[in-house]
Image (cartoon, rainbow, N blue to C red; front, side):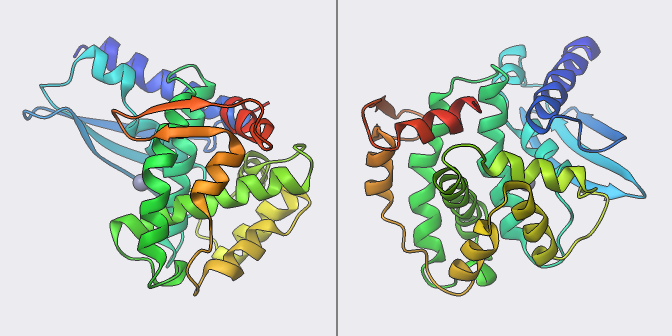
Amino acid sequence: MSDEELTAWIASAARAIAAYYGTFPVSRAIVTVHGGGGGGVSSGRTVGVRGTGRIAIAVGNAATPADLKTNWELVHEMVHLAFPSMNDAPWIEEGLATYVEPLVRARAGLAPGADIWRWLVWGLPRGQEALAGSGLDGARSWAATYWGGALFCFDADVAIREKTGGKKSLDDALRAIVREGGNVTVSWPLERTLAVGDRGTGTTVLRDDYAGMRSRPPRDDLPGLFAKLGVKGEGGENGSLTFDDGAPLAGIRKGITTGK
Ligand SMILES: [Zn+2]
């Protein structure tokens, strides 16, 4: 990969993030690309150090321009820039990046909107199952952290849209957090972060959902909810979905997909 190709890849991810949040979430970020080795794009990691967001990511010799075009890892890492560091809630940091990354890419035209739903249909049942024994506070496994956390974000997004008649969404909560200085360079308690997010939507959904899921298994009827949203079929990489615009919550599905 040439320096120009790598720079264009980083710039397009950064523009997609800025479009989603309405601003780039940190005033300064350093992205270090580790080259060499036989693999593709891997090993992304994001931290905040003295006011600067730092992302490290590996791009091995097997990576192709097509891989960069379809890559999700860098946008996932940049979502981490836009959320405060948490001392003891990895599920919200990873769950949020898992849920928001496909939204950011689809809305920027970097991925088809159907990809959002292929991954939610694939991953959310895994999160639900993984949280059954622990609730969010006890989430430590990969599935509980990434997809259990994503389930919290998805539930909250749907609930905010329902409660506000589609006027507000999780997007507004996340933008409010960034606006108030919540990004990876600062460490905030979870409760404060959720409260700031709730102020951004004029609801108490984030705090209520957390109270409901922190030590109890989620009670979602996921097949029923996907049906109400008008999503049918198999998720995952080789999955195939159809969308029903006559479903009762089809408007919420479209809002999540398009941001409108
Ligand atoms: Zn992550």
